[in-house]
Each structure stands twice: as C-alpha cells, then as structure tokens.
Amino acid sequence: MSLRDGCILVTGGAGYVGSHALVELLEAGYSVVVLDNLSNSTFGSVTRVQEMTGKSIPTYNCDLCDKKGVEDIFSKHKISGVIHFASLKAVGMSVEIPLIYYRQNLIGTINLLDVMKEHGVYNLIFSSSATVYGDPKYLPYDEKHPTGGCTNPYGRTKHFIECILRDLYATDKVCPLSNYAVFVPQQTFVFTAKTPCHYLDSGSLLSIITDLCIVDSMSSAPAINNPSN
Ligand SMILES: NC(=O)c1ccc[n+]([C@@H]2O[C@H](COP(=O)([O-])OP(=O)(O)OC[C@H]3O[C@@H](n4cnc5c(N)ncnc54)[C@H](O)[C@@H]3O)[C@@H](O)[C@H]2O)c1
Image (cartoon, rainbow, N blue to C red):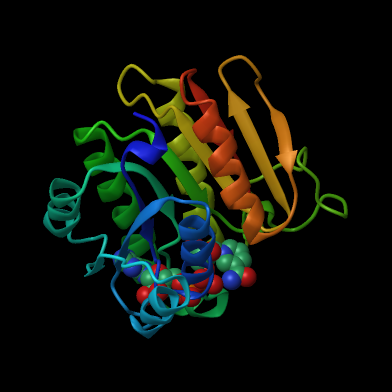
C-alpha cells in the first residue's frame, strides 16, 4: 500500500516535534491521525495546526501502553505508515524513574509494532535520540559512530528500540517492516534491501518528511530507513 492510500499515524503528534511534523505532512498532501496521551502536551497544538492548514485531524487521547486503544485506532482508520514520536524524553528524570521510562517507551513501542504487524503496516519512521551514542569515541558524531554506550535510561530506551527495529527488519518473514527510518536530529540514514546504508540527508524536521516521501516513492521495493539520534 502506498503511503498516500491511507493515513499517517503520528504518535506524540500533539508534542513539540510531532505538531510541526503535522504541518509538513498536511502541506505535502498526506492525511494524518494523531495519537497522544497528553502527558507532555495538549491538543491545543493540534487545534492550531488545523486552523493553520484548514484541514481536520482525527485525534486520540491514547497511551501506547493501552494496546486495545491503539488497536481501535488502527481499526477505525486505514493507516499506511507511522511516524513514532511518542516518548518520555527527559534524561534526568529517566535516571530518577527508570522503570516508568522503560515501561512507557519500550512497552509502548512494542505494542505499536504488534498492532502495526496485525494490520499489515510496515512503514515506520522512528524518532530516536543522540543519546544512543553515549560518551563520544570521537567528535563530531557521524554515521559510523557506534551506538549503545548509553549513559542514562532514556538513551537506553532509544537504543533498545533501534535494536528491536533492526531485528524485526532482519527477520522480515516474521515482521516485514518494509520501510524503517530512524531519525536523528543531525543524521538520517536509509537502509534498503538493495542499498545497505544509503545516507540521505542531514538535519531538520523537514528531512523526516523528505525521507518519508522518498521512502514512499521506493515503496514497491523492500526498503528501510535507519538510524539514529
Ligand atoms: N526535541 C528534541 O530536541 C529531540 C531531540 C532528540 C530526539 N527527540 C525525540 O523526538 C520525539 C519528540 O520529541 P518532542 O521534543 O516533540 O517531545 P514532546 O514531549 O513535546 O512530544 C512527545 C509527545 O509524546 C506524548 N507521549 C509520551 N509518551 C506517550 C505514550 N506512552 N503514549 C502516547 N503519547 C505519549 C507526549 O504527551 C508528547 O505530546 C521524542 O521521541 C524525543 O525522544 C527530540
């Protein structure tokens, strides 16, 4: 299914990056659905996006840890792809309440991936974090820098999710994630079946959307976008 044949589910769509992504997606002609548990936002941001763009956005106050709630959204809408921004994201707090970070970020993401698989949705852009790099082996970071030396639970949740996504892609008979992107503010990598690591773009929120459009145009071939920050 081409991304334009359905809606893009934006998890964390009421948040800072997610709400800006909504504008880019709508202006690029995509239909969007927002899932957010409002733990760090309000739907006021989505209302403003609707006013700015003149387009309506179905919004759901849903926690990714509520799998039934996530399933209901996938049942109500024809979801063609997911941009996954929803996350607890404060490094310091993650040290104080690690279990909550692991539960929310990891279980929430696993629920999302389960439901995507149940509904045959294999296009995903995951918003990761520079914290996956941990203490730098060298600076500036580049796409060859190893990941995994994380120094806090928040970073570890992002790193573990990157590992899960790579495993899913590798075992694509079990879960054929066709398009998988890990967006990092400074680096965006794309992996495809034919091109193991193709560096796409650097930088900004716009690059996520650019990548999404590129992935969309590649969607006839198994493709993956990958990592970091
Ligand atoms: N802002 C940055 O500079 C930055 C840098 C690197 C990575 N990131 C990543 O980008 C993403 C978005 O960041 P942001 O700055 O917009 O954060 P944000 O807090 O503004 O947005 C995250 C949204 O996710 C929602 N959310 C959190 N946990 C949820 C859950 N379990 N179920 C449903 N909704 C949930 C929150 O209510 C919030 O609206 C995050 O994944 C973050 O780790 C952000």
